[in-house]
Length: 166
Image (cartoon, rainbow, N blue to C red; front, side, top):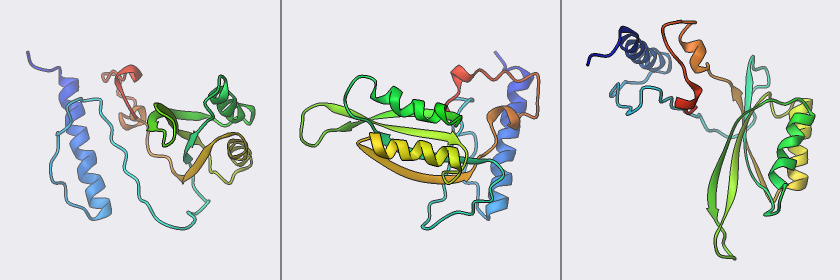
């Protein structure tokens, strides 16, 4: 059966986003519509050395860390952000092979609102450094648009967070 008109409008907008991004950064769009899930969003990072400007309108920070293998360690690490009213917007875990003992332990990728040098986030990160087995600050950067904001309030498009991975 044919897709509803809203799905066609969504695909057309998504192709337009690719063209706009390519124009802005002097790139060439090699292919569009290659995703296998229409709710797929891809993140790209520009990686460099040195500090990024602190004058960011909507900063977001990414960090990777590993906690000790004991009950409550992850909860304790995450609660430091809540105590300082730092909003966690993404948490992912990935298995990491242990080098000495058999089995797996996990590293956690965390995104939060704010710049790492701001008072609340800096204090939360210091707590991570004191309590975690491993901490790596990936950096602070301008937060991109959320999927909902990309649709400009289009009521015909249903955005189910359970179907999206950002």
